[in-house]
Amino acid sequence: MAAAAPAMARALLLCLVAASLALSSSAQSCTTLTFSRSGDFALCSSLQRLSSTLHWTYHPSNGTVDIAFRAPQSNTGWVAWGINPQALRMTGTQALVAFVNGSTGRVAPYTTSVTVAPLQPSSITIPATNLQGDFSGGFYTIYATLQLTNNETRVNQVWQSSTAFSGGFPAGHATTGENVQSLGTLDFLSGESTAATNNIIRRRNRHGVLNAVSWGVLMPMGAIIARYLRVFKSADPAWFYLHVGCQCSAYIVGVAGWGTGLKLGSDSVDIKHNLHRNIGITLFCLATLQVFALLLRPNKDHKYRIFWNVYHWSVGYAVIILSIVNIFEGFDILEPAKKWKRIYVGILIALGAVALVLEVFTWGVVLRRRSRGGEKSHHGAANGAANGYGDRQAV
Ligand SMILES: *[C@@H]1O[C@H](CO)[C@@H](O)[C@H](O)[C@H]1NC(C)=O
Ligand SMILES: *[C@@H]1O[C@H](CO)[C@@H](O)[C@H](O)[C@H]1NC(C)=O
Ligand SMILES: *[C@@H]1O[C@H](CO)[C@@H](O)[C@H](O)[C@H]1NC(C)=O
Image: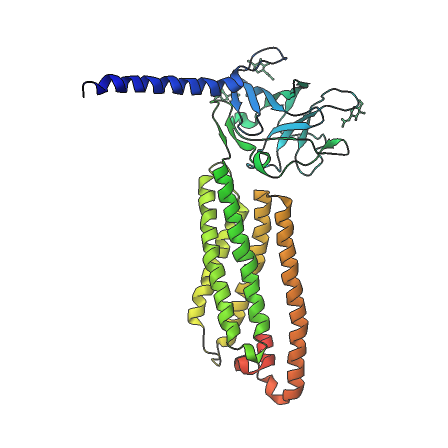
């Protein structure tokens, strides 16, 4: 015991030394940088992605902040940094952009409100003055003085670096790795900055996949099964179990995806995606209603069955339409690689094409059956599966 105490003290000391070394080395990464523009910056932050750093001095007396954004890039590439007043995402970012103009060999930084590529000069909602830029030693630096909106020092920052151009202006960047993780929140007053971590990005992607597969693909498939398979007598009652099975698994996966969305929403204190959230909650309520209404379903020949059917189709189609709307809403928030949106659009077109072909084909079947069956086919929906025409109307 007596010998253990000095040993522990030594270990503790070693730990402290190691920790302070680690701290000073991480601090070094931005505090030791010097700038061609005169005057030092009071605070800095290593932005963790794309090896960039942000340096600034905040003036509380008038709510302005002098900034310098520095990022490595070649003289044939571009860098950009900006504040997004709306959300932690690229679209809507009020950005400063810099690149070496090939014909003048100079950097002339400008402002742009990010909507679509290419990034052409435009005015931004955060007044930026003293705009200046330089390129040296493989690094771009953009200087500016920003007038913070309502003296609000906590902002969403987004930055980027790429070599893609179109028509002489920056256009496009890698859609994987650090190029999609280069965003986070920053407090100019305290200097505290948080990067959008890999973890959050993974959770957002998982939320997107779960919901796109369940609400966006399985549910429309289940509706197609119910509407078209039931026309074939041989598929009765298999279509019913397929339909229920499809919608129930969609519901279970969908509720899991919905839960991940609620968690993401409650974790994101600064940013609210109200429309996406409200549609999501509506969808959960409607789909839950749909599941429980199954238990209240009157018999096939009950006189109220027709009302239940009308209720079931209207809620069902409303869920499908709202789901698709909300998935596109989600694409806008998540901003995944373009191919994911294209893949989803492709799946929707394929489902639509299948539905169209089956629509034509099953009407053919029903009309033929009707012309053969004569009288028998006018019993309508109440007659259920025994009657093709009735079924056709019923779905
Ligand atoms: C801006 O905020 C700082 C810190 O809260 C405060 O000291 C300062 O007076 C504010 N300035 C203006 C112009 O509102
Ligand atoms: C804001 O305040 C700082 C420090 O007090 C000063 O240097 C700067 O010129 C002021 N900027 C404006 C736009 O008034
Ligand atoms: C590059 O500089 C030339 C000459 O000043 C100018 O005409 C051109 O518009 C500049 N290009 C861009 C993309 O700013």
